[in-house]
Image (tube, rainbow, N blue to C red; front, side, top):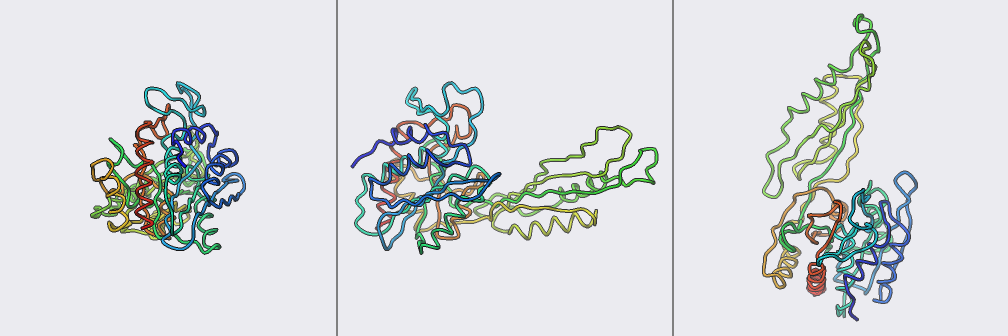
Length: 374
């Protein structure tokens, strides 16, 4: 059986699947996988505001080796100003336009098309597909991992179809990602008249001192595989409309992207200590989005690099740059590598994937799967 990745990607793009996604886009993917001999399980997790989220786990074959492909069908909102309907796939100038063409319905379509032409005598292939990667990622891949544990499924290797290429297809793959933690600081005060400061307690100077102390923190200088960790203050709010009132509270938000020298909880405690030193009555709330991870160069990166080189004549750069992905969860199961389309238009207006890139990606994915199954 042969399948056209352009047609498959178009079917997925045509489904409005703004995060959190469920319904029609999963119907479309299931309809593609069932004729290929996959057993497909779908389940919905969570409630508003972070859900409900639909997830799909498809499995073909038994025993080892077990090679998994992971990805997401949800997309970010398209925004205004597209040249054509973002959920009406359109071919123009050798490009397939539509929200999700690059991130990452195109890669999922390429993998499905790759499987259609793959001879699988032994081993297991699975697809781990979520509708909650672009959003909070609470009810998505983490729920899929739990379901896989219930079924006794554990991949040996995992490929994620995130758009990692930069200037051309195959020039970069991701072997790790930095961790991410967001924090919210609230400093209480006592509201009062600015002419009577002794009867009030201004929280703003305390918060300023806190932020200055945080800004002075040097986390590290990076490692062989990671850039330096960074702390960024992303919001400062008082919300005081009056010119003659000392406010009752002041708030700030910060984000830390950290490398494998740190753990999220340790960073939270370090900031908590810094906050308490300046304002013991202040509070800190934190949300760790994911820990840093590294799939050290080895058999999996060699496998992917060799497959890219065989088709394109280039060796990809192994990188840990960029934001977070669901690899931060899947890395707890097995070695993980990310490889997909050029990312220049992801999340942008008129997002588009080159038709030839989609066809070549299909061939490379087929080669990777063949090599992974041994």
